[in-house]
Amino acid sequence: MVVGLSGGVDSSVAAWILKEEGYEVTGLFMKNWHDTTGLLQSDCHWEDDIMFAEMVAKKLEIPFHQVDLSGPYRQRVVDYMFSEYGKGRTPNPDVLCNREIKFDSFAEEARRLGGDYVATGHYCRKAEISKGDTTYYRLLSGVDDNKDQSYFLCQVSQKQLSTALFPIGGLRKPEVRTIAEKLGLATATRKDSQGICFVGKVHLPTFLQQKLEAKKGNIIEIKDFTLYPELNEGLPSAQASDEMLSSLAEPFKYQPAFGKVVGEHNGAHFFTIGQRKGMNVGGYKEPLFVIATDVEQNIVYTGEGHAHPGLNRKGLFIRNDEIHWIRTDLKMEPGECRDYLVRIRYRQPLQKARLFYRHNGLYIIFDSPQRGITPGQFAAFYDGEEVIGSGVIDK
Image 1 (cartoon, rainbow, N blue to C red):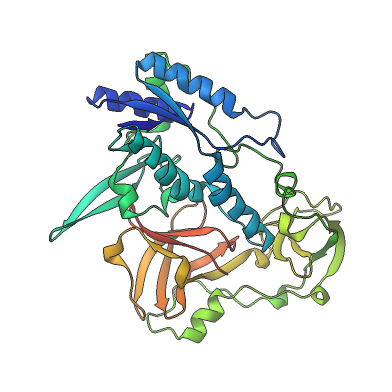
Image 2 (spheres, one colour):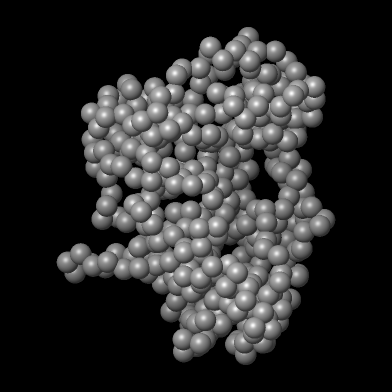
């Protein structure tokens, strides 16, 4: 059994639980990033993480190893980030890191060390269900609603789940802290990591300028609320036409003539929908929010206040090649309609939605308008506490 020791309290307690359950546990630390470009100085680096991970391994009396996965991490996570931001989309590196690194490259290294299973400190759970001669693995939300991390694992596969274990998924964060304190683990009071997975908290424009060029452009404020269609509450019928679904999922197309120039930015690809910081535009009673970006014309469109209608949309669309089913036995067929709960960002309360699978992809229409639907992010769909699948928001 190999546990991914990150230097945090969650993986530390996960290792202890497995040892208490009688597993032969080995700790493995992965080093995924060396570059300090854009990293905020107040954040700890991997040198601190590995020191804490090794201290925990010594305390628990388990073998400790480390592996450098910075090559595949850059190729499969960071380069994807640069590509997506360059297209004006906002990727989620944490979801990608789990799919491409923790349960792929890292799992391969764990197997080389003789580990049949890979355990992590994620707040989620795993279960099984049999259908005939086939066993399907279920990804369930963690019991701690404040820390549930099932969303970050919404792209894992059946194969990856088959050898994964989540020892703390049935615990709440305060319980994990208490266990660590009683054991005298060095990570007991250590703060949780923030920012980009295995990179840390960064100044995003500086980080992205490693590959993306800064270029001046206009910030345009949109005030005319008559531009927006009425977003009704409720779900469309199961017989909704393709034209209706496309209309509900289509983001509003802005033009410079719709508003006025109120400032200047250094690159539309450095901004994301719903963002309120970094525009340096003053003189408003309420904050300005990004409601759209146009990377071709290098324009950032903004609206004043939380209630601006440009922040809300009724639906979204996922292309066929971006749909992922964890429960492959529950994959939808073209023409099928199904009701699920959906979340489009970490810690967002689950939202009632109706999914329509069409020949070109998946339409997700929400019961109530959603704030900040962002291309490049993941929409994860749940049946109760189980993650059924997910997909990259195309628009």
